[in-house]
Image 1 (spheres, rainbow, N blue to C red):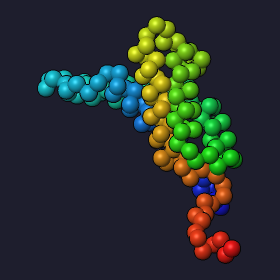
Image 2 (image 1 turned 90 degrees about the horizontal axis):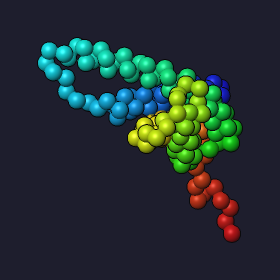
Image 3 (image 1 turned 120 degrees about the horizontal axis):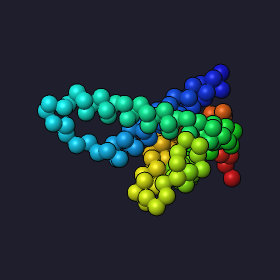
Image 4 (image 1 turned 120 degrees about the vertical axis):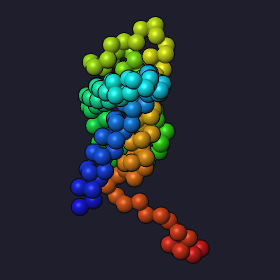
Length: 151
């Protein structure tokens, strides 16, 4: 039964991590400048459209690498946030270099490359918050001094 729960938690963690990473990417790349009073509806429409596009793009690019990470982290019970931050940075760096089929290389644009790496780090942190810190099929049992035999 725990395996079904872990499957649900990892799926929710992946979806939320992709959505938050896309929100970060859109906000960081366009900024949250207040729209003029007469263009508020258009600004929100364009923002929502850009957010949906970024979410689908990041989700498609990160699906297979994240599936591999989820399988490895669940089987080895990797719970360290540093692992998820590093994997997010590597995934963002791969996207910046054009190693992902969904992204073109950032080329000489250091800002774009940095933004993609930061987006990967944000996604890794969010995934760790939801599912990574409790990774593994075995329950985490805290050790207490009463459980150790006296010497």
